[in-house]
Image (cartoon, rainbow, N blue to C red; front, top):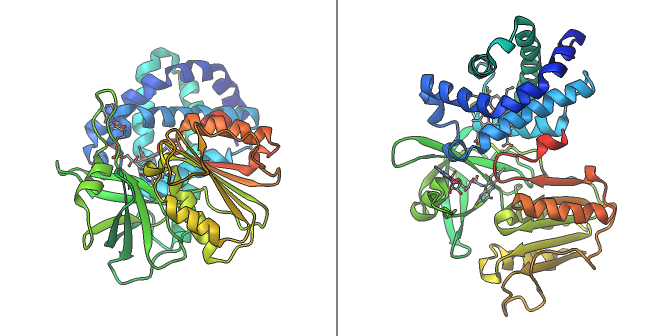
Length: 400
Ligand SMILES: Cc1cc2nc3c(=O)[nH]c(=O)nc-3n(C[C@H](O)[C@H](O)[C@H](O)COP(=O)(O)OP(=O)(O)OC[C@H]3O[C@@H](n4cnc5c(N)ncnc54)[C@H](O)[C@@H]3O)c2cc1C
Ligand code: HEM
């Protein structure tokens, strides 16, 4: 709980702190990586550092958390904390690291805000930081325990038993544990981190959703190679996986984590995706088929063309096997392979989305924003609409 004195100080200084968060987080990461370069090797995603996405996610989450505390000092914004804790667990964060982050974050705050950071102001924000850190540390401890691993020790070697080209830009890897132990438990919709050594020797982590039934001994990830746009470089991990990893190779994977996973209700399900956002949906569908689910399932997917639509045939087949499932696809450039598909961007007009559905969304943020609006208009309450962002979540803090 945030003390009353601190709440007053945080309320008075929130606009100044929030306004300076961009500069604060830039300085924070700069100083931390200068003093602790090992954190950039095998922990932080340097693509997200370069694009500034991680900085904005960190800043947004702190401001969102502070705002939630001011609205209700006893509250803990659940969705925000769950998203961060799962991501932290998937990269193996340990509680001692919160002291390092604290040191550099508060050093940056003092530098940027200067004399405005009186001892009272520093103490109040310290309280906010440790309330948030404490909540995250507790959640992360629980996640490690549930995964049956020691804190931070999430990594295991896996062998690629099959590589399958899905489209010209998307490849799937079927994986088996290389240490002879059973595959760890996972829920449909969850993801793993892949840890790769890059050509310059630095290790990088990226998350990939499980695209096959997580109840299986074998696990599958499906990766789209990211092309750099407007002069930006090509995505480094996805292109390395696409170009250099094949059958027989070994990959280092984290235990599965992720707060967005298939519920076990029997109400209708609506799985909505665009592009490579189809992967968690494919995992959920495979799970439904494996468990003989009779749920009403509506699969809605938008893509550039049938040729670019990864896992298209598999999704169709799975939908056909389920007793009460239906799929509708939208393509910007339709093709003869999917004669019933609609043309253009996804538009839910005329699609029956039952108000008691659980809805899962995955795709680019503008796509999810637009479709979420349509789903809410159809009468589905916001708490039933779940979404996965394939990058730092810049949407969630707004809702905290
Ligand atoms: C929960 C979750 C699940 C995911 N599931 C999947 C999945 O199932 N399948 C899948 O394919 N992906 C998935 N992703 C995305 C995946 O984790 C990676 O983000 C993706 O593969 C790109 O990684 P990369 O290393 O290739 O790109 P990066 O090198 O990280 O680059 C990412 C972007 O930043 C840009 N960039 C890099 N450096 C710079 C620079 N210096 N200046 C400007 N821009 C720059 C790049 O052009 C690119 O657009 C998921 C992500 C999350 C968080
Ligand atoms: C109160 C303290 C912290 C807050 C508020 C915080 C917040 C966040 C947020 C918002 C994200 C992005 C989540 C998403 O993907 O949507 C994130 C990811 C991450 N955090 Fe933290 N974090 C904290 C502490 C730490 C600590 C102690 C470390 C360890 C050094 C750490 C390392 C990371 C890493 C490596 C990622 C993934 C980065 C990426 O993929 O770009 N965080 N954190």
